[in-house]
Image (cartoon, rainbow, N blue to C red):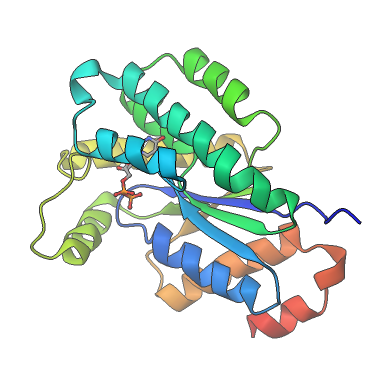
Amino acid sequence: MRAMRGRFITFEGGEGTGKSSHASLLARRLEALGIEVVLTREPGGSTGAEIIRHVILSGAAKPFGPAAEAILFAAARDDHLNQTIRPALARGAWVICDRFTDSTVVYQGILGGVDLNLIKAIERIVVGDDKPDLTIVLDVPPELGLQRAASRRGTGAADRFEAEAIQYHTKLREAFRALAAKDRGRCVLIDTTLPREQVADGIWNEVQSRLTPQKYRGTFREAAS
Ligand code: TYD
C-alpha cells in the first residue's frame, strides 16, 4: 500500500524571529503523535545544497548580484527537494523547513530588486506542485529581532545578511507581512513578541486546525495540552 503523502510546513520571517526553535518545537509535538518528521532548513538540507549554502553565506556570490544569488538559492532548493523533501513526503513523513521560496521572494525579489516574474518562473520550475501546505510567518519588530539575533550569536561575527542596517530589517518585516496578507490560504502570521510558550501554542493551534489528517483527530488534542 502506498503511504499517504506527508504534510509540508515552512517557517518564514526576518532575523531573530525564532524560526528554528519554533520549527523544532513543532517537530517534537508532531513526533509525540508518532508522526515521522523531517526537520530541515534552507539554504541547505542536502549535500549539494549545503555546498551552495556555504558559497552564498560566505559572501562569495555577492559580487555577482542578487539575480545570481536567486539562481543559486533555486539550485540549492532543487537539490534539497529532490534529495530530501520529496522522498520524505512520498513515504508519509511531514517536512518542516526553516525558510523556503518566500525567502527568495522577499530577500532577492522585494529587497534585492530582482524581477518577481523571474523569481516566480524559477519557482514554478523548481517547486512545481510541491508547494508548502502551510507557511508560518513569524513576525517581530526589527529592533527586538536584531537584539535576539545578537544575543544568540554571542561574540561571533555577524553573517553578511545580519550585518545590514535596521532600515533593511524594517523593509524585510513589511515584505513578509504583505506576503502573508496576500496568501492567507497558505500563510499564517504569528506575533512572536509574546512569551515563547504562547507562540508555540499559537503555532500548534494553526497546525491542528489547518492540517490535521482524519486519522490523527483526537490524539492531536491530547498532545497539545
Ligand atoms: P541563516 O544563517 O540560516 O539565517 P536565519 O536564521 O535567518 O535563517 O541564513 C540564511 C540567510 O539566507 C538569511 O539571511 C536569509 C537568506 N536567504 C535568502 O536571502 N534567500 C533565500 O531564498 C533563502 C532560503 C535564504
